[in-house]
Amino acid sequence: MKAAVYLTDNPFRDVPEELMHLIPGFIDRREAEITELNALLRDSDFQGIQHVGHRLKGTGLGYGFPAVSEIGRYLEESAKNQAADQIRSWIDQLGQLAAHLRAHL
Image (tube, rainbow, N blue to C red):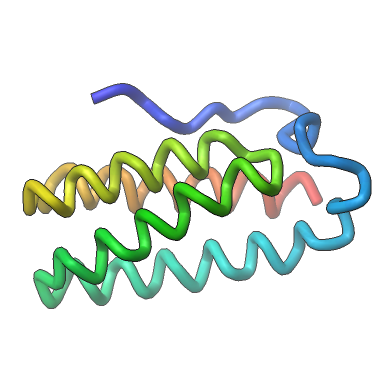
């Protein structure tokens, strides 16, 4: 399993200028998804985790955050395999990335 989080000094370098005003809401939604993913994992709702992973996979690239898409892809794959430890790791990485983005706003 490859590490997905790429913490850089300028995490917004790939974000189109016309989307920059949307980034605080983007981060808010990722933080809400972390809460949702933790609840889904606690309930062993792998189908729900797969759905959130799929949503993340599509959202990240559109906003200029390929790491979010990569985490989403791995969450989706891990949920299909019901690999709870891997899911926990990807949720943690999504949290690290969200915190990093928030710190650089």
